[in-house]
Length: 303
Ligand code: PGA
Image (tube, rainbow, N blue to C red; front, top):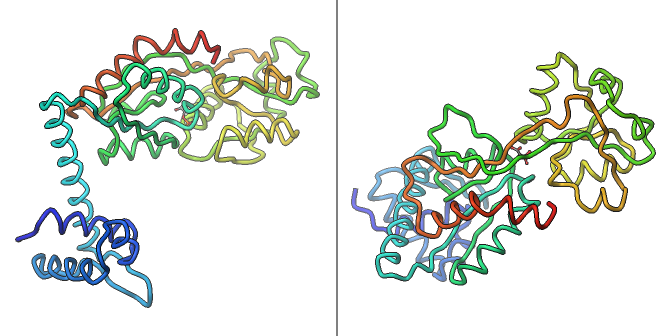
């Protein structure tokens, strides 16, 4: 197979946008130039990579396979570029990090402090749930991830750096607000707003209820901590969220933490990367920074 990196790049753009027009705009090429390169690529491969049905472009089965390898090759090339830059002493690297939706309540603060110390760093931050974070690690899309405990069966390096207590929240006029040492069984009478499938908070809550042989009665499923807090404040049900997501709401008394026996559920934050991944100098510096400084910085900011 005789293919060029340029063809791979063009293929990736068309596969990403599923549009020749958008790919040509992104690459600053004309559309005929893009079509021509894809045609030549398909000739070298000996199979069609795209099919056009009406106005829509789709990847063929061969195209999907090709896409998987093209991504891996591009990631390796980017890594090579980074290594070469470091060898040139530029060290002005790029840091690609992804954090759990819940960690986004403190991660930007850490990044801000880190960037103050390393002026030349460009950061790309992706905020998503646990399931997507794990997928990103498998696909080698990110340098470092901040998340709850990763699954043991995955080949990852994970270092624990901070506690993540999950607490029960209620609106200020809820009858349990004044109660102390609320027995766990009492929660059985309440309905809960829970995070979406794939959320680490959600699975920790489900595991906790199952371990205590209690059924979790779900009023609604919501895809962000913000939606849960708003829903609880509006009286739609109780919620279980990370203490890190609550700042203003407690201060302004829009929400109250209930004193339930066996709470908080104690989770921990981990900084994670794929074992075998060659971390850039910047990524190594950020990993050390998180391990050594985060607790102090976040305590000072009362997160
Ligand atoms: P989540 O992750 O934002 O996906 O709930 C947090 C965690 O893993 O505890």
